[in-house]
Image 1 (cartoon, rainbow, N blue to C red):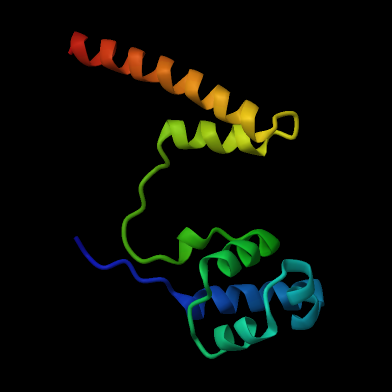
Image 2 (image 1 turned 60 degrees about the horizontal axis):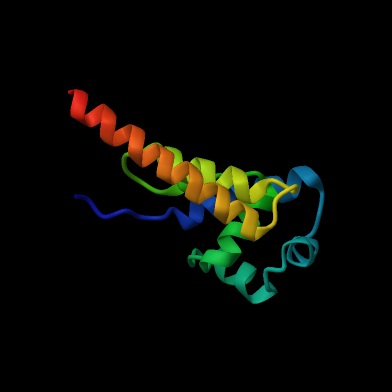
Length: 119
């Protein structure tokens, strides 16, 4: 399997285009995202951001970080998508989201096993 490489330069250039389009400064980006100026400066030099900075900047700019990884992409697993949706729901706290995930996972595993037996 080929090595996955993150295109840090491409991500930075897309981020820079967003900064220009929104007519904001990099200092404002840092304040709004919580990403340090030193991280932003290193990124301008082509260095990879840490995971938390990448996530914050991606969310701020509306960019999908996986679009900057070379190689084939896979679809997210259904249970991962359900988990994400439960955790995004403002009506659910962590405990409720975890409980719902367990219920859905149990049902999913049962139906998946039944479906496999029919093949």
